[in-house]
Length: 337
Image (cartoon, rainbow, N blue to C red; front, side, top):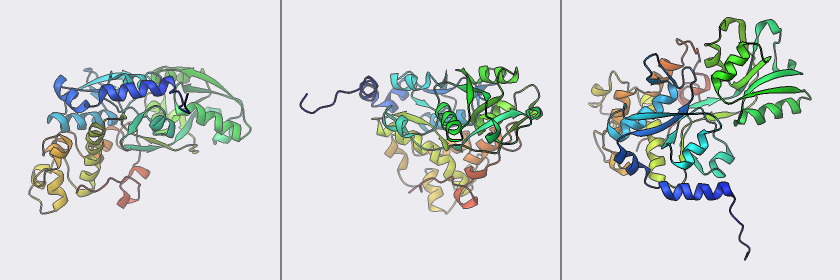
């Protein structure tokens, strides 16, 4: 074979998908809406409300991209995906981007042919149990049955943790988050494991949330963020800078309430971000006020966080390491210049 290695089926699919979908921004503009892949339903992150409208922390990343591209955050349609289906949906072009509590890993970034454009939530895997189980630590879970989602990094992390600590477990596997929650709530397993943000979301929906506790151990790094297909750098930049705009806006004190007044600011970075000076929008193929539209219609990172998953919501997630870099966290976006 002249020393050439045969492409794997997955790699071939990736190459084909990249070639077929270079020019995603033009495709999105032509059809008049963004098709965004989300979870099948995770409280606070992505779930339809009583009127059937999708709401949540991840949903607002999609809406930010819609605001950037169209000047209208409502020009987004949502495709619910399971952990197993999500990557095929993105590879095939069924969706334009994925914003679905998905962990940035080497194999997903490289072998599956995706581009993670940033992190909108720094997380880690944990364990939730009933308080009456009497367990205070994950190191006391030897012999437990564990409810888990298939097709996730959670499975490998779980196996590694138990093996490293000479413990045994039995997996009880499901595809959808609501199925896992229902099984755990019904007592079909001793433990529910997923990202700690997911545990907080699911705990809020249990019959008696106060009867359950998330154990203190964090057994992995789970940087969660939106992703697109490899091979279309312009589209990757659009999604990346939609997310970055929300983070930078918080850092600069720009909110949906004061953004109009902030256009009069003498701060050069604020002027650039809101399109008052410079030609940064056209560099992305967008209007120059794309940053203004994001903040005005969706909000800055803090507004979105506090609205959907913050301490005053049923999810009750403190900012923690997701605070800005200058406020004790690690949230950091490149400068807008």
